[in-house]
Amino acid sequence: MSGGRRKRRGSLDDERPLVPRSSPRSREVLVLYVACEGESTEPDYLQYLNEQFGDGDGQDRQPFRIQPVYRRYGRTPCEVVATVAEAAGEDEAWALFDRDQWADIPQAIKDAAASRIELAFSHPSFDLWLLLHFQAFGGAQSGSSKLVVEKLRQAKGAEAFGDFDKKGDKSVKGSRRNALKGREEKAVAHARNLVASCAHGLCMPGQAKIGPVGDDDPQSPHQWAARSGHAPDCPVLQRDPSTDMWRLLARLRIVEP
Ligand SMILES: [Zn+2]
Image 1 (cartoon, helix red, strand yellow):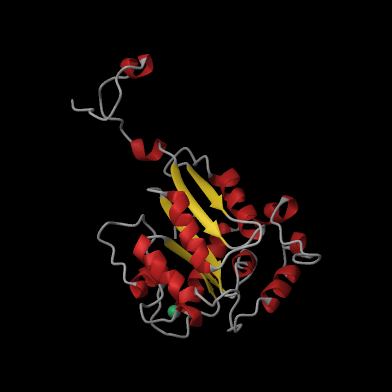
Image 2: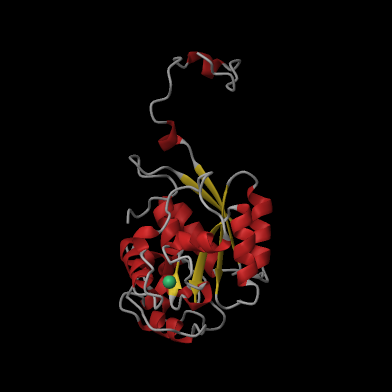
């Protein structure tokens, strides 16, 4: 037996049989650093994922722990990428940003590709991802989240979001969080449909990468942005509307697409 990297001095270790653990992957906790611009919606949502799904399901789904990385007054996409690169070290890192602050998105994608940081881009906004839990949505929004928020407030089953973004309350807690529960598969299906119906025409959700980043995965910015299932030459800013958030849920195996 090699076991070179395992310390053998602890009594607990000594009592363990010297056989390979049968399914170490399923017992290890997958740690992901996920950085975002927003100061309440996204961090609340990530916390919800931890609490609702983070313990695994006792079967195939590995326990996970998302470390949200955010700041009170937000960041630009490039700052989101830089911050998560620093925070994550060798751990898996994701950067969430949306079309709201688009100025440096092309640069942010280049930086993310160079550092192998997964992207979850939403166009026009992360709020689209919340809406897709309740209904399908289509039609270019030209960067405005207004209609998305209106639809979310009125959606069937989304009564808790009736006052979303009124008086600055964009939190996802309490009854809002409860309203999302059990709708993950629907949200993922709706988000995948948006890839399939992208105006570019050659974008296919089945082409999306949902496993961990591999050493041999290509990392040109175009190929990196194509991990979403959009074609490499589908301009990110024209993926309107779209959200890559479904890929994070697939990665965590909350939903098997
Ligand atoms: Zn596309």
